[in-house]
Length: 268
Ligand SMILES: C[S@@+](CC[C@H](N)C(=O)[O-])C[C@H]1O[C@@H](n2cnc3c(N)ncnc32)[C@H](O)[C@@H]1O
Image 1 (cartoon, rainbow, N blue to C red):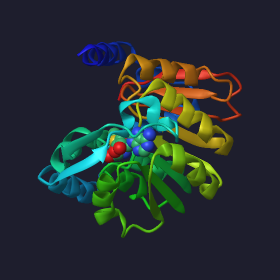
Image 2: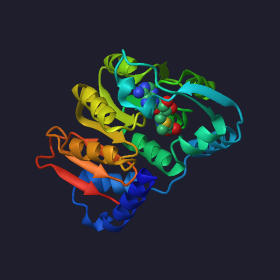
Image 3: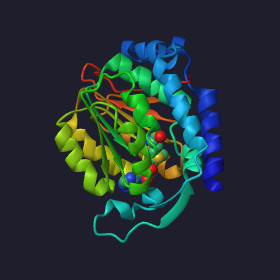
Image 4: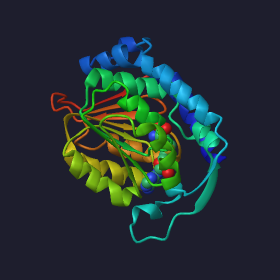
C-alpha cells in the first residue's frame, strides 16, 4: 500500500514536471524523442506480439516458481532459496509483462540504434524479448530468467527467433557469464529484481562491458523508494553522461561527446 501511494505520487509529479519537446537541446535526446518516443508508425511485429499477449492473458496454466525479486538474498549465491510462489500465466501476462507502449518504444529504439549485443535481465514470458528482437538488428540477444517454469513458457515462442538465447538461473549465476559471452554491451534492458541493492549491483556489473554508445534501460524506477534511490545514485555516477527519466523507466548513456553531464525528464 505504501509503495502504491509512493508510485502514484511519483508518476503524478513526473506528469506535471517533465519537459516538453521544445525544451530538449541535446541532438541525441531530440532524435530519441522524435524518432523513438513520439514515432507513431506501426510495425508488423506489434500485431504479432499483441496476439501473443492476448493468448497468454487467457492461458489458465498455473506455474510454481521461486520469487527471485522478493529479497536481496537471491544476489548471494550461497543464500537460502527465495520464497516459492504460484501464479497463473494469465496473471503474469497481465501484471508482469512489459506493457505495449513500453514494448513498442523498445522496438523503435532498437530499430533506430541498431544494437548488436543486447542483454535482458528478466525474461518472464518473453514479451519484452519479442519487442527487443523484433527489428532483427541484433547479432546476439541473451535474456536471463531465474524461474525455470516461467522461462519454459517463454521458450515456447522464443526458440524460433534467430540470435536469441535464453539462460535460466539466478542473475547471481547468469549475469557475469552472459556479459562475458556477449563481450560488449550495446543495449541492456534491466527488468528484474527491483530492489535498490540489486539494481545498483546489476548496473555496476554491466559497466565494464559498456562503451560510448551503450544504453542501459531500467524499468520501474518509481516502483519503490529503494528503486527511486537507486535511479538517482546511478544518474550521479561519473560514467553516466546522460540520464533520461521517462516516467516508468529511465535510460543511462555514457557518451563521451557529452562533456557536461545532463539529466532530462521527458513526458511521452
Ligand atoms: C517484470 S518481470 C520481466 C518482464 C519481461 N522483461 C517482459 O518484458 O515481459 C521480472 C522477471 O525477473 C525475474 N527475476 C527477478 N529477480 C531475479 C533474479 N535475481 N534472478 C533471476 N531472475 C530474476 C523474475 O522471475 C521475473 O520473471
